[in-house]
Image (cartoon, rainbow, N blue to C red; front, top):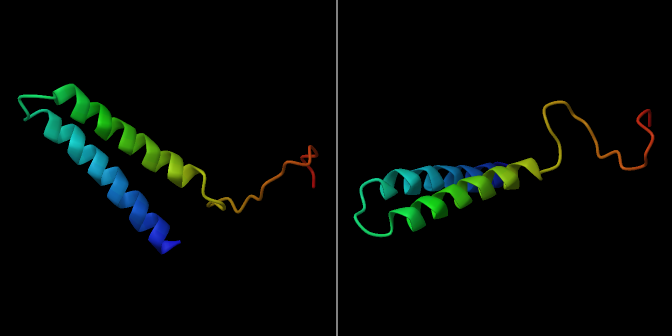
Length: 67
């Protein structure tokens, strides 16, 4: 759990850093910015796919909401 959070945090902050770095580059601004945006999006997707949450819900794919 902690390692997943550290991995998410490194990806998230790295993506934001890349988007900020793109502003100061003279060449390839768009490529670096898009790469940072993709890394940030992937880090958020990584966190959202993790099991468990603050609401302690479980996967409910059986079709019945009352189980």
